[in-house]
Length: 497
Ligand code: FDA
Image 1: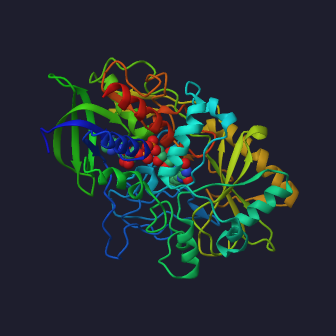
Image 2: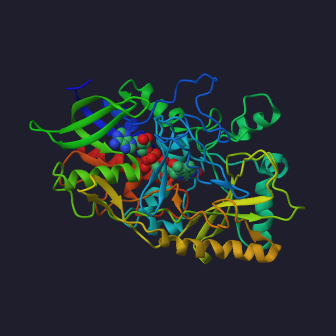
Image 3: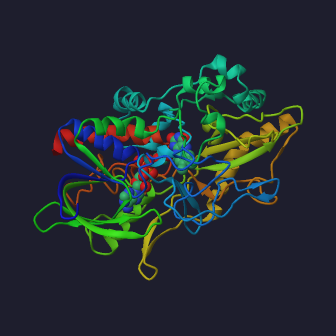
């Protein structure tokens, strides 16, 4: 309620926010989680909480009147369609040079993502978090994060036989024939559940093409892991459809937090003021950066240091499809959960996920999301005239990512005698280079914050999400975001509380 005084307020319920909530509650601290998106705990008229990727409806997008699918063309035809404006689960947030996809709701990105749960290779860790003790991360915090997230790997024998991963086996064959290391990638999807989906004994989710707009079954989102445990402590409350708009020092100590309550059309229905002793920024790389940059520039938190807003990257994301020969089909049934990849990071700067294209029909396409070692970093700045935060990313900055992805796919195409698909991102457009799923940075550890996420100019303010990671994680990022949050919160509980 407005006027309340709370011990800890956490902005956002993604990975960073969920870790903070659980560990603080276990340490005996009352925690209030504030989330701008919906709770996603109530089925719609069709009995389902989330809509299907093939039939996006009002539940799909965050306050848009038209879908903005990452893969928005097929055989040259545009796929986007009109939808009612609603506080849907996937935000396609548009900046001048890039569209940043993010989850909206209790569970953050875990609601919409593919669940690929990858621990970076130890030899690459120094480039991810240079000021963090890698021994501690690999002996304590990565194992802790993987266990709490429920990470598991596909049964290789089932992979070899199920029709749902024919596309994965084609991906493996092509990778290996060109001499690239093929790797199984862990995921938080319940692999036993997926086998039961195939057997027809449970409602289908991954095998019904559910991804991007939520999975109704099978995926262990944060609601089923960290957040369930946090709520079970009895010390954690969650306010969905509440958006934090300001944080500033309170006259009597602690921080004044301004919060807008939203309805499902995005209208503000109430404005609330809460005082919190400590505030954790866990609004995601973009959400946290936008708040901090605006609050510094507009005088709410003027002493934040000059690194705030800097060091943002797209994790080098770039997508592409390859057209296979007619004798090399990828299957009409494709599990929406990816389970494997091609590792050419050390030789070519690219790690490619063999991605599903769960259209329900045979496409003869192999589809890939590459994570590349793109060197560009952008900055968030406050545009006072426009009254909004802007991002300096330029569309042309994707070229290094394309070049790195080509180290894999040019070689495979040459070996297989195949070509790139040109019909998936427009008309005669090969590369999905307009977007990222993996925003990282903007309040980088050891620069905008101290080495544990403290905003040191303001005791009691912390950053604990993907904003801490300097633009690239060398692999899909949420395990690293979770493990870093585990490390930081343990230290903060031990020393600050
Ligand atoms: P996260 O974005 O999860 O959470 C932030 C939360 O804060 C959101 O719920 C948001 O609504 C809320 N918020 C923001 N501003 C607020 C405000 N002002 N007030 C209140 N609440 C606010 N990663 C991976 O490792 N493997 C994968 O397979 C994938 N796949 C994937 C697919 C797609 C489609 C997407 C969009 C993303 C992925 N990712 C992924 C990326 C992964 O989901 C992402 O890195 C993490 O969710 C980031 O975790 P954070 O805790 O930083 O923020």
